[in-house]
Length: 292
Image (cartoon, rainbow, N blue to C red; front, side):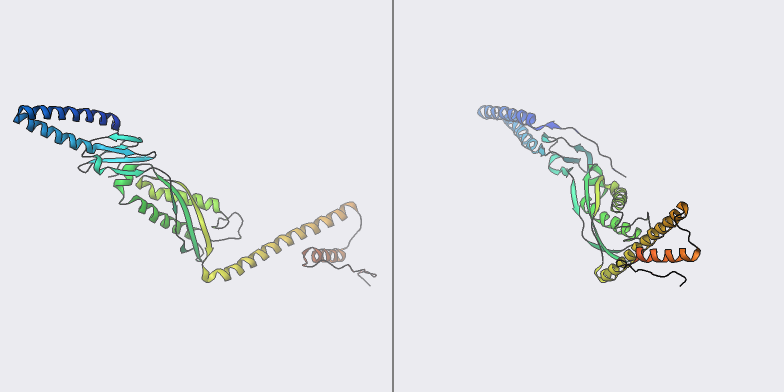
């Protein structure tokens, strides 16, 4: 059965301290008077009351800001106190109260090795910022909520890494390296689903380390360089073809010069060589024609 947090109010500690001190003074005065009068029954009764008074001193506890105390009595959940300050409650409850921090926790996950969507081994790590929002679930629904968050973070990160390639040259395709914001958002959503049963909220989850595994890092670097060269060449050729087409269209529209198919082919060849070449083009003076 899934637990639900119940916020509980308890007595002010300072008020109870004042009341118990006054009660202690009164009991001490009555005990002295009973001893002088040698009233046996009064002495026994006051001794029991003093014992109860001593037990009541065990009901004090303190809470810092963003800290909660989960109260239980004989295994039964009574509620959670979230108000910071000095408090008093049932002496049988206070000593076993479970204190839970409501502050933001920072989990710096260890670097793990996992295969990406294409089967390439990569090293990946994530930083997760989380906090407890339901103390009853955190204490009673999981064995150790901090360990639970740590293990589920690693599990979610492994699943996420296997769902995306490390890198891709396809346009609008998501990848671990090229879509960091989208991947981090997906990691946060998946991790939130996994840890919600522990009463935990994920404030942020981001990749802190991403690299190819050492055994394939060199080969993958060469592959990335080759893909980058191919992509750059493709863009250069597309731009060069567009410039040649624009030049021919302008020459024909303005009637600057009439070119037959052979001259057009020569012009296209020369322009592509100039635009796509690695080195600057060398000027050559042609004293003849295409036909001589």
